[in-house]
Image (cartoon, rainbow, N blue to C red; front, side, top):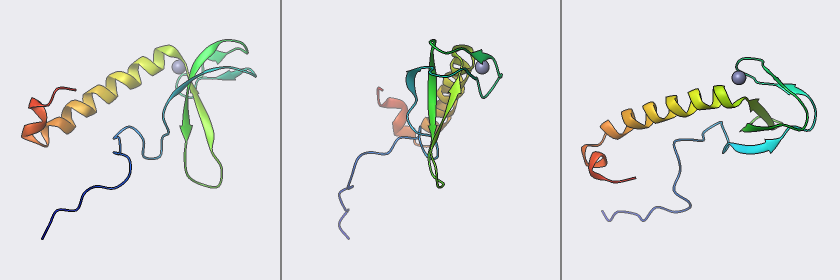
Amino acid sequence: MSKAKPKGPTPSLIGGTNGRPKRITVQRRSECFRCHEELPAGVDCVAIPKLGGGYSSDRRICNACFILVLAKTAEDLADARKLVPEAAAVAL
Ligand SMILES: [Zn+2]
C-alpha cells in the first residue's frame, strides 16, 4: 500500500463550523455574542463567521472575549500537540 499524497489545502483545527476570524468595522450597533457588551457602529471588532446551515452569519466578539478565546485555542492546541510525540519537536 502506497501512502496517498494529501489533496487540497491543509486543514486547520481552527475552523470546523467556525470560519476564520476577521477584523471588521461594526456597521450597525450590535453586541458581543459572549458578554453582550455593546459594539457601537463605527468601532472595530472581531467577527467569527458561522458556517454551515442554510445561512452564514458573523458572530461579533469584543476584544476582551476574543483574548479569552485565543487563550482557550492555545490551550487546545497544546493538548492537540500531546497527541503526537513528534509534534512537540516541530516548531510552529
Ligand atoms: Zn465580549
